[in-house]
Amino acid sequence: MKCEKINNYTSLLVTIIGIILLSGCTWDNNQITIVNNTDSIVSNIRITAGGYSYLKDKLNGGEKISYSFNPKKEGGGLITAELNNKKIRREFGYFTPNLKNKISIILNSKDEIKIVDLDSTTQSVDEIITNNYAAKQNLHILGNTLETDKHLFILSGQSNMQGHRPNEAFTPTVKAALGAEKIIVVQDAMGGQPIKRWWKKWKSPDDNKLEPIGDLYDRLMLKVQQEIKEQKLTTITFIWMQGERDANKGWGELYEASLIGLYQQLSEDIGRKDINFVIGRLSDFDLKNTRYPHWTMIREAQVKVGESNPRFSWVNTDDLNDGISRKGKKIENDLHYSAEGYKMLGKRFAENALKLIRNNTDKENTK
Image 1 (cartoon, rainbow, N blue to C red):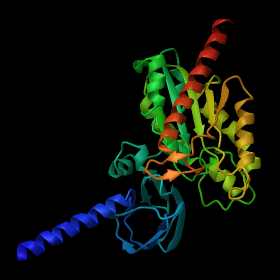
Image 2: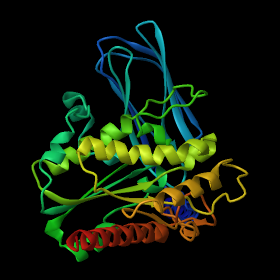
Image 3: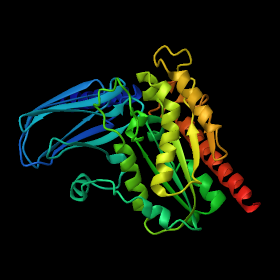
Image 4: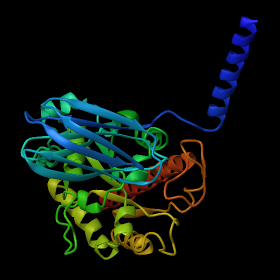
């Protein structure tokens, strides 16, 4: 009789587990780690992200704590705390049920908060702290070694670039065209971020300055430096997928100048005027501008810049946001792209980049 009851309980347990799995429940796919990299106590720590809120009374010097969760809703994160009797506050990341994030928040001395996307670096949190994770200032070292050898592809932007996986389609496509030993692919992206996190001369009279200017550009260039080292390059192509946050904030009137300014900033830092530029245009998610008031304005700016220079081009994404998401959910006209959509995005990026390389190489050869 006891064995029969045990078997019944076992069957019931198996059934419950099966229902949970069939219902689409998943393990937590987002993680936030807070590191107190000071000698002082950080107190009254509050984290909000993805519809969740976490409180921590204090974190002693040298301690760290992690939180794992599945986002319930879409939006950015926020940390507030007290350090050395001063209140500190910082926005970070972008969380959505369709994407995963692994973020470290490092609290340093002088009330500095450093946000690190751990999915975009091979370094551990401890290595980042040891190396101070700061971009080197002398970026012209790249320009000094650019002769003829490899092709560098730099990919950056916010959540739809973060959702793009180069190894699915982009890298295989450029590898097939140019040779595996001839390409270097560097991608660094963070969801929910405006272009001012990359362009250092961005200014707006109504900006509350919660977010830093140009810090994600420095992070990107540090990764580029680590990959380049002393290698020689024949072409550089910059691939950009961003604009959702600026459309949401109503900063569309600044976007054309921001795109051009970002390109010029990269060209000046590297010391090259022949960098190719591929721009991913925002999708058809909000063509009526009901949720993101400057959505179509950003789209128009992206096309205008993409058609303004023989070294520039733009990529259509209107058909990439329907289908099945990476989490297996059906999406329609979504802000983010389907699993297959991200593969198509990578292929289009690669095809546009290769076309610019061929066209401009042919022109140089006929001079």
